[in-house]
Length: 264
Length: 323
Image 1 (cartoon, each protein chain N blue to C red):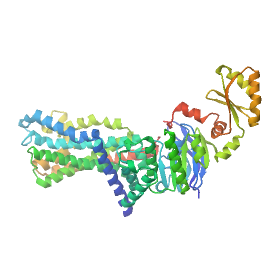
Image 2: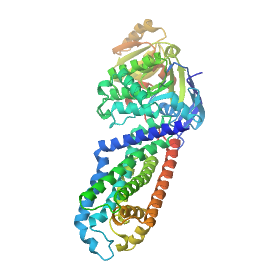
Image 3: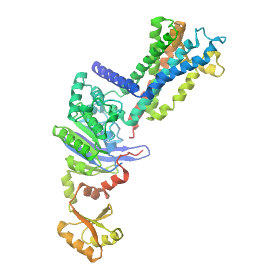
Image 4: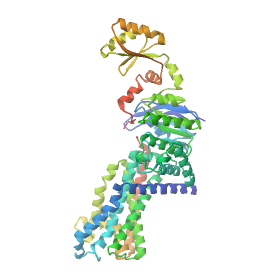
């Protein structure tokens, strides 16, 4: 049993490594994870910096400081989406057949992809923490805060990646997964990622109040800007677990369906 | 124990398309079995079921002694698979791919490295091993695919149209490698739409048409079963119909091929001169003629009513399953 587990873990690690290398070797997969969120961070910070003077805006030193968690959220969501696109490309070019014809648990194919997405999520968290430190946004909770932020971003990347993988497995089409791109932004803008929800107008405010991404962003933001709050952190973890459960269940169902009905 | 046993295997797709219909076959250990058929005949569907990539809708199949549905994992441990479109990641290097394949089969890192390098050497890929697969030619990709299918030393190797789209030199290289693998004891199930490939490589050939196995035997027996040689006549187009009437007096007319009139001659070469004289007497000029001994194409015609080679030209080289 432990031998099987060990073999499956080796496969997950190997597929995760392949996934990371694939992202670095294909610029169009890397750009959404690092380049776009960094540019958006720079543009939003420059253009809407005075928003922090609005009555009711959370107590931050700068809009840049507020936006860091949002940039991480954007990055991890796009990492999850890119992971889904890469999996769909694998299906389209038949690479998944190579994996399906191997004596491995078929779910390790999804887990391998998610391992790569997790690594990219961690990388993006570190990138934005370094950007924050470089441009004058200290981490409120120090090393512990940084580690919690990295952990939340990494786990969230896995959670979102699960949904991307489910769509990829269900449709087998990279174009369809790519079509989720605008949806990612809509969901992000309807959360507290780029603007405090208490200052939003209805119905955006109510949507943001219940948007699980708001809970995750608030958790990341607490660990690097405001300091730990157990209730915020609990909400963030529950949101991650909820999305991850949904994504993984959807992926498992899509995987079963693909194996049962594959028509190629 | 046979390497492959198939009983009444079927696959019906949504919409009622019956891609494989009640196929029975058996492949002995150490045999090269050629599965011959035109595009869309059901070859790939058959391979996908035997390699556990697709569930049958009826019937049963055992590969290396294991049921493809109930013991899929055991089947996967025993087989190597090189699918029609070499399923390679263009961003990986050849060495990375073969080592990943070793990991997928639970081979240790050190052993995977050793076997991977050995196989890359065997297929002549060492100089290109650290280049990305996307930079390889089609022939190199097929050779890498073949090598990676062998990394766990499978008992049965499935090759789905391994040479489709390759130039003649690359095709010959693959044939030599397959023949050598077979000499080393690997059972090979090979699908092909190339008659010459089946004739050269296979110990036995199964002909599939419209999802049904219409013939199965050694290439020699199949050709002997068809029997007589036939005469291929090139004539001016406008006289073909009249020529049919003349030559049909000497033997059975076969379906025309590339505009040529084909007639079976039981008497072989001795009947060529009378045919030519009869055509001449009818005022029909013969541009060229050839007496052709029975080939697998003749077997194919006899069993299906049409030429496989003509089918290839008509439909292109990529097999497409019904969708």
